[in-house]
Image 1 (tube, rainbow, N blue to C red):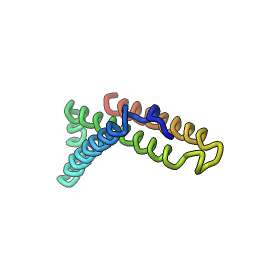
Image 2 (image 1 turned 45 degrees about the vertical axis):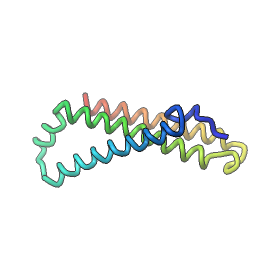
Image 3 (image 1 turned 90 degrees about the horizontal axis):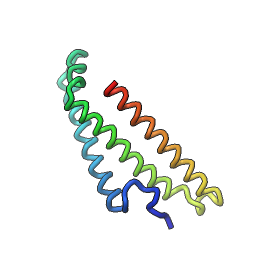
Image 4 (image 1 turned 135 degrees about the horizontal axis):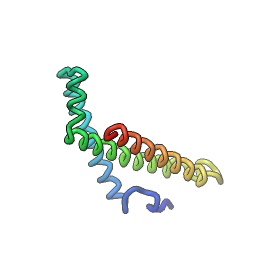
Amino acid sequence: MVKSVTSFGRSGLSDWLLQRVSGVILLAYAICLGGTLVIGVNYAQWQAMFASTGMRVFTLLAILSLAAHAWIGMWAVGTDYLTERMLGTKGNILRLAFQIGCSLAIFVYVIWGTQILWG
């Protein structure tokens, strides 16, 4: 049995809801950037757009949404496919290594993205 100790939220329902909300935020961000690219902007306009506080906050929200979305997805994959039944006696160790690697990568990407955005 998989415990929810390593999941992002308190329960499966909160994880499901967080993943759906983060997906909607990512869709809105992709539509915003896609619309900007379709209209056609030069470098000065692009730079001005990302210099505004609203766009920076929206981008930070998208970065955090991507991190939450990725963590819940990777946790689901890890707990579904990296088990003792699938991998033998080392399944739990591999799952733990996988989760630590994913959480470290997500943490680095959030810090890096925030530094690029606000630096």
